Structures are given as structure tokens and as C-alpha cells.
Length: 450
Image (cartoon, rainbow, N blue to C red):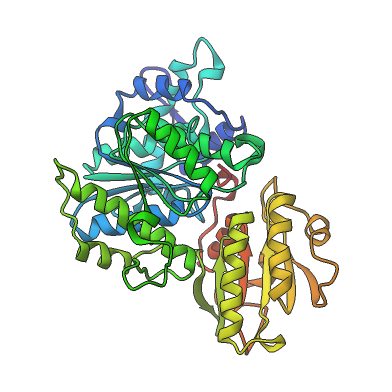
């Protein structure tokens, strides 16, 4: 390990590889739920989370896209923004961005050297009090936003809400995008239970914006908000239930689900601009322009590699599979429908529940399937993936690796003159491919999960 000793007798890291090893050692300790430890940790740092106004976003799906949309809206209005999301696609610094510039390696090295002795001090009496990897990164984000003098920060919940490390903030607005069954081993096996966990980000008296929620989930959120005296604003009450209506917000990101996300982001902006003491320069025109300038890779993203069109889509759970079904049906209609319109699909997933939902959809639309195992401990094996392919699937099934499919940054081993190749499934798979397509870039895969 490359370190130097200071006059105080402690070691500091001198290269980024050591920082990666240290952060991985924190991640290897596993997930830690509960905010008591985070409260102590952030208190020891002087409460940087209080320095910048926060919009706090939870949801099963769509929270990252909605965060990116809000970031675009605020920047369109001339504000300096902080954006905290997880996991990253390729590089760790993507999680912490200021005006969409990611935290760079020297900054991460400096912050780690600064925070590491404080983390050791708060856990000196009890090792379990040491910040987790996610808590460490969350603190890094709050400090970066404060020091860069951001005007607003958009903070995405890592998982759930009530016990998430980000839930130490008191936001301007709490946002819940969607609610469905995912991470059931942590959050519960019923929509109502998951809704209660996500509603845990609601703070007394602070407005709540809800997206496209099932009725039972919306009822839970409204009940929690009512108990806390927090007004609730719904996109269906504001814009209606028909996303094809003329007044519904539009975005440059493709897919019906992005229209729901655009409506959620637009409603957050409306709530802020209409507040009695509003200081935000937000208007209808600013919102509309911002929604047309959103950059959020890996969400039905169209690119071309070596002349072969690709679509990258990180639909990775049962709710996402429903959206994928709609997008694939639309793609096939664009290609003329029928058997000729079926694309080649590359896919990989983490966990049997997710794999089953995705492969049931993909098998309906694919001409052939290329199964890939992402480089993650929880990734489904080839055998597990193939076991989830419906028996009536008549296409060819291949086992592949990212390296085989994309041997060079400008080459795709699959050639289809008729249709784009669709890559769908785990966000980690999408990240590995995006890294492969960037010459000289190595994905920080071992730091991706959580």
C-alpha cells in the first residue's frame, strides 16, 4: 500500500489505487441499515448536509432519471447543482457531480485522506460505528456540494428510504417516483410495506411529490404525510393520467416511463416555484427546456458501435420489465412488426426474481438471446439465466462475455443489418459495456454494488 506518514503519526494515501482498496474494504463489510450511525458520522463532520438545499428522491424505479431531469431544470435556470446518485455506471466519481462534472480521482483521494481518520475516531470504541462504504460516499457528496457552493442538491436514496444513509437531510421537497416489489429481502414483500419504507423520507411540514404509484402505495404515502402535516402533490392530479395528452411534460429521454418521470420532475419544480417564500428562478419555459436537455446514460440509450446500432437499457427488476415490454413492442413496430422485427437481445441480471421478469419479456420479443454474467457477486450464472428462459422460446441462446461481444472500443461482434442490438438488464452490465467502449477506461466494478 502506497502511503506516507504525517507528523501526527497517521498514514495518508498517495495514490488512487490505495483509495480504491480502502473503499472496497468498507464495502466488503456489507450493507448497514439504520441512520443512527450516519447521524453520528455526519455530526462529527459538522453537518455538511445542512449547507445546501436538498431535493430528496426515493422510488423503486425512475429516481435516477428524475434526479437527472431536476438537475437539468435547475441548471437551465442558472443554478449551480449537486447531484448524488448510485450506483455508478463506470467510474466511482459519477456518484457525486457538481454541474454534471464528476468527482475526479485526486478529489476522491483528498477526501478519503481527510475523512478516514474521522471515521476511525467515531468508531474507536465500537467498530460497528465505522461508516459503511455508502455512508462514507454520502458524506463525501455533502461536503463536496457545500465546498463548491451549490445552490441546490438533488439526492437519490440508495435503497428504501426510512433507514437509508441519505435520510439525514431535511429537504425542500421529498419525492417518491414509483413503488413496486424490489429488494424484498430488505424492504418487505408487499407494496404497502415498501411504500412505508420509502415514505420514511417525508419530513414534518415539507411537501411531498408522488409519481406514478399504485393505489395501495399512494394511500400509505398519503397517510404518512398526513400524520406529519406534509402536503402531497400528485402528477395524476396535476397533469392527468393520459401521458399522450397535449399538456403532459415531454423529455428528450425515450419511453413512456420517462414521461412519468418528466411529470414528476416538472411537478417538483412547480411546487418550489409556487412556494410563498420561493427564491427559485423556475418558470414553465425553464422546466420545458431543461426536460429537453437531460443526459442520463443507459436508459433506452441509442448509440452506434462500429456501424452497429445498439440500445442500452438498464431495466433490471419486475416493474422495469413491464416498461421494457412496452419499449420492445414499440421498437418492433418501428421495424415492421412480426418475426422480421425481432431484435437480438443481450442480457444479464442479479437475482432470480429479476432474471425471471426480464427474460419472460425478452423471450417474447427476441430473435436470439445472448446471456452475459456481470462481474458482480450477486449476478446470475449462465445456468440460472437459462433456467428462467420460457420453454416456448424458439430462438437461439448463446453464452457470452462483454469482452467477446465488444472486443474493441469500436467493434461489436454481433452484426444485425435490420435492427439495433438491445442490451438490457443489470445496470452493472450496462456499465461494463460502456467502459469497454471507452478506450483506456477501466470500470470500477468492485465499487459498484450499493
